[in-house]
Each structure stands twice: as C-alpha cells, then as structure tokens.
Image (tube, rainbow over all chains, first blue to last red; front, side, top):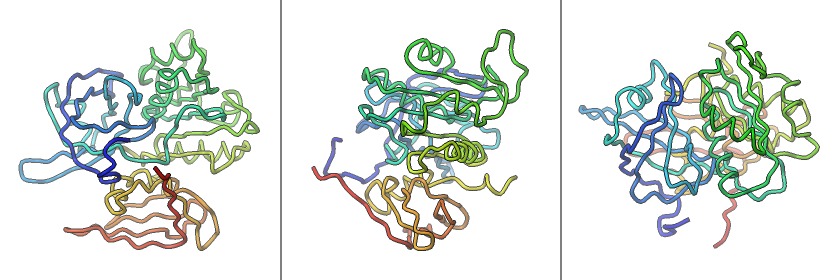
Length: 249
Length: 88
C-alpha cells in the first residue's frame, strides 16, 4: 500500500458523490470521488461522518462495494428508517454533495485472490455488499477459486445486484438465493425459507475442502449461519463473520 | 429485541481500534485467558454502551474495554494479544 510514512494512521478525507444508482427500493449505490484514496482490499469498509450545522456528528460504517482495481469507488447503502446517516445518503444526497470518509478499514473480513481454498460467501440482506466486492475482485483478476454465494433476502425485489448476480451465476460462481418473506414469484427456482443446513450443504463446498467462509448481515442472521456452518463441519477459524447489529444506520 | 442481536463484532470498531493502535488490529489474534480460545479481534463480540466492550467469541470473557473521552480514547486489554506485521 502507498503512503508508508503514515501507515496505519487513518485520515478523514472529503468524499464527493459523482453518481447515484438505485439498486432496490431501499438501497442505493454511491459512486464517490475521494482524493488521495490509498486503495483497498475486498471486504474492507469505510467510516462516514456527517456533521450538522450545530456541530453534532454522526458516524457509521459502510462496506466498500467496488473491487480494488475498479475505476469507480462505490459504496452501497441500505436505508434504515430510524437511522442517523443512511436516510441522508439514500434520500437527500445528490451528485456533487460531499461528506467526510476515512479508510480503508479492517483486515479480518478480507479476501485476497490466489489461495487454494474454495470461497464460501453467505450474506443476509445488504450483507451481500462486501461479498460482492470479493466476487468482483475474483472476476476482475481472472481468479479461478471455487466460489459459492448463498444470499438470504426478504423478497426478490430486495435482492441487491440482481442482474450482476445472474451474470456471475451464468459464469463460474454458484449462486443460491433464498427469499424469506415472499410467496415464491412465478417461475422462481430458488428457496423460500430461512437459511438452514440443507441449503448450506447444497450450496457447498464440502467442509473437508477447508473453504474460507465469509458471513455478513444482521447479527441474528450471522449468528445462525455461522452456527450452522460449524455444525456442518467447517472450521470455526475459517468462518469469518461481520455483523451489522439489529439494524445499520 | 433478542439479546443475541444487540452486539456486533470487532469489525464494527475497527476504525476506532486503528486510531488507538495506529495499526490495523482486527486481523490480530488474541488468546482468551478464561477459555484459551485463539481468535482474531474482528471475530470478537462488540457491545456498545457508555464505552465499548470486546468479548471472547467463545466464552464471553472481557477482551478489551474502551472508554471514549472528550479528548482521548482509553483502552484496557485482557488476555494475550499478539499482532503480527508483515515485514517490508
């Protein structure tokens, strides 16, 4: 990474919104310009800080959605009704607006291509965001790691990156989606229940292959998914978890 | 709300920890003095209240308490922390 003189020290930077993409009714992707951005690894996040006119500050963490080598730097943000930061980012902010951002942050929930172990990604809702950064990184680098994604969402229209997930599924990524709050849409071939052992077994890979697993989403989802993975024989130390809490912000 | 949904994990305060340590710390390992589990800081449970508490993901023993004061953060550590840095 560049900037070894300040290695480890996090600086707040001014980020400017270049473009906004609606992903689902509650979720938008912000394309940002962040002068001096040092680069990131797939799975890392940033802290965003908003300051009100009276000096009150609110700070939240958001996963980086874009791959490390992507020309666009993107965050994907889900609107939380009673949140302090996300309603501004998803409802009010327009291209040209700015806010403070620091990062990249984190080293535990990070995947780098080139390892021999299969990759198992399990996401609940917007927990798919850092997992998508990993899948995009794998695609962009031509990495051939065996990769699987199990995604749990409320309804089909809530599935973030749906078209891109379909493209990945048509390629070499095994993608399974389960819808937890919906009648199955006509022609739906995925699951319609909460995540369970059978689902994880079907998505694979075999725990004996010692996959690196990354589980991200609301805390109850992550607790359940991680528990099931360990029950199925996955090594606890290889099950990496990132919990959003009961809600984000 | 379920009690189990109140916590997040070490990732959630990775930025604050990096302020304190001036280094990325969530990939560092810690051996719990209570149950002996060796786990990474990012995998520890995080509880936010007046300050921040990190707990062992295995037994819940306290790993760190961080007091957020107006002009500084004060962190107290428990158990055996080990941070390996790749040499350049």
